[in-house]
Length: 244
Image 1 (spheres, one colour):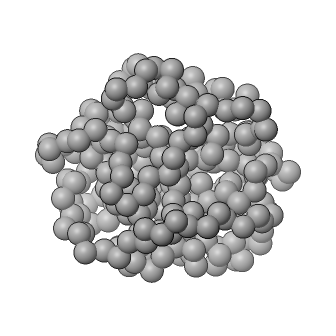
Image 2: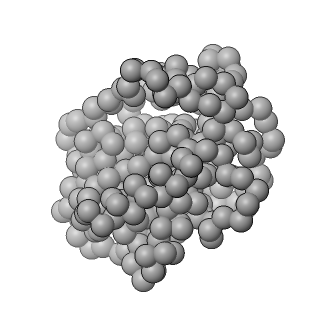
């Protein structure tokens, strides 16, 4: 979901990056919920990954850099893959470099330059279908896609932002999937963890929820939303405002 870069005007409260042990998801003990995400993921929340190496340091800001999407394709793919921690990549059961290349190539195909997108193209984003038994790595396919989209817009205030949306069933199911995603992103340095907003977050007003979603979109982060009309309308409204 391409969004315009945030201006210097005051924005709603910032969506914080979620670190190790932190989650905006409501607690859920129901591990039988299936979670349907961007690639048709269906797996339980238990994955036995308690012994992963996690970087909990403060994390320095990403150095100012040119628009990443303007870089040469090969150079860009090498940089993105090198920034993913080895423990994160080792968890993936697919070819991460090829996955990153496919995402980069598709986004560059609809990028006009100067932070503009070609809205006239009839070419659509590819569908990546990840099927199979539980615990075979489908969630990490989502994680790589979310991270690459965010990273392409990070490092430069005016770089085009690419937000992502993960939709699942029920608040508990969506929260369970988000918790797994946070666990994987916690393997990355803190300055390389994409912002995440949970549209099903409890104990906040509708205004606060919508502002959190909007700010996350403007940063090129990821929105986790359960499949109810009310939540989807809030996300749709925030996307329209972010696009301007």
